Length: 277
Image (cartoon, rainbow, N blue to C red):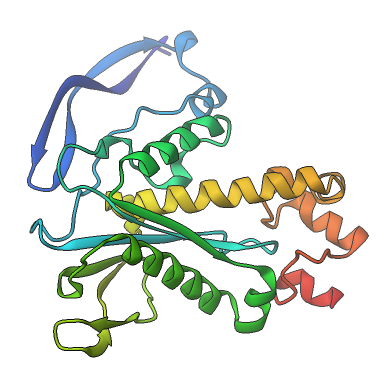
């Protein structure tokens, strides 16, 4: 048996090209023979965060007069705590580094400072941004879908208030997912109440930089909320491991619920939590 294997290597060059609204990095591809004893272990590959190649679009509408608000949520799936929504308006030109944007889920949890740094960059360079939330009581009262929509509407309206002299005829919402509860606005041109124009995009946080930015802001704010809650209530860490699972249904979290029951922050309408109401 040969002591060599073939492996495909992708190497980034320093050159970047722009094609319409899509920004990508040039790559070149070649085959290299690697000794088996030099082959990277699975763990080593997983531990190393791959370099980010930006394939996200800068905008949905190329017209500079169209104001696009990207919106996304964080914390819809956990059985604990608040759900957050972010909304962002980004510059459509190169004054904003769109290469920094990617789906918030693609940032490694082993280096939380990275996503925090990107969130700060967004706040400093975005035209407008906002993050809002609904807590577990609202989630249990109106369900997680409607609570998420409520937080998203609040974030979008907060961004709209920051846009002085906004012509709502030029407003367009980019929403992550396949559902959005229409947002009613007042058209100041004709003084009519109407729905804001929008588009829902499945996997939008991996397609458009404004949605990715919104997802990053929402995740960072929710993680900060969880960290502060755990600091103030150490039993959340000791009994449920909330500091690491962030409220998701990990084994440690589930075992903690079975042994200790639920807290006032748990979503009583979710899964196993229903059994302790």
